[in-house]
Image (cartoon, rainbow, N blue to C red):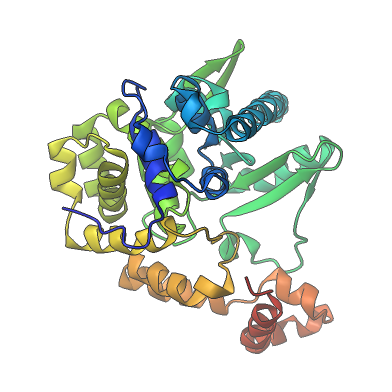
Length: 384
């Protein structure tokens, strides 16, 4: 299989060649670095959140081929990320302690623990926030704990259907601005999502600075990361770099059984195709045979649209790509998922209630008003 990168600038091709050289066993060829738009290269490295890996790779090469300001910028980004990851690690420790005291079971999804697990160093991966999965029954208790620690919810809850409308809530600390997301489902698409109890039974234990954390087992982690990457069109290469490093840690037989039981083969196949053809990942034959098919390949081709461009799809897609992205998102889903997705979109949300406050006895009016309020918000979204 091949993927046509027709619209890819050479700066992106150079970035991919650096990421492919994971062991830094090959020198950067002079012709690869020639006539480069280094401002665009830096913009791509930052957008794809892979600048720690780029800095580490270029630092060990002949830097005479790279302008000094580029290396200085990469070094500055790398050091800033190291400080941020250490800050997140400290917050992670604090939250873990308080959750344990409140008897809240938690599974840490990404953040510093994922960086340590896949890269061996928290500074080698970027993270915007801390993602924590808790049992749906413990969400309110977890929110109370975060409030006591100085966190505030980014969105106010007005209507009582918020657990159905979403799969997580975002919080930010009032003073040091650390961000935390509390999840009660792994994904929003109402697929055959695992119960918290199932995930807890398959959890993986991690020790960091004499403290114990619990994370998803490797097979659950692969399903979570491929589902997350697929939903976001893999618009950041960081997510594919994660897949490359997770592959050698998997029990292939167990993963095949896992996918057969719970689904997700198409997302895994898409991730394997992209990581193999773009980053030279070594996908075991039995995993490839079980996951790589025509639909996975079509989805991989569609994801190139976002990988080759600097776009933002989260939390909402830019207007310039919104129509394309909505078609792509529907192509990911099964028939049942599409019905559930449309039904969920028609349900009123707290954003509707905040946009047009009504007395509680009139909350039922948000159901017919929902399409108009949603369209109003979309029209007010700035174009990019």
